[in-house]
Image (cartoon, rainbow, N blue to C red; front, side, top):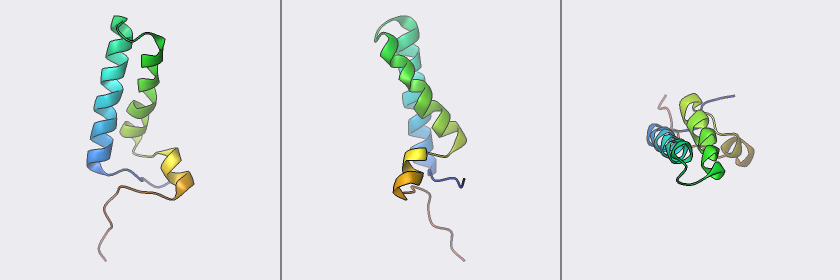
Amino acid sequence: MKVNEGTIDRALRVIVGLVLIGLAASGTVGVWGWIGVLPLVTGLVGICPAYAIFGMSTCPMKKS
């Protein structure tokens, strides 16, 4: 699979994922906060399966 997330998209996913995991670990939001693992992993890897399914990408186009 090709990387389909741009730099800002990846950074936001990592931040949101860490915040959700932190809130879940502290007991603030409960078990649902562990869903933050998903954006964290996709942000670190740079591949979003949902983007791939819908043919989307936030990566800037490479100039030839």
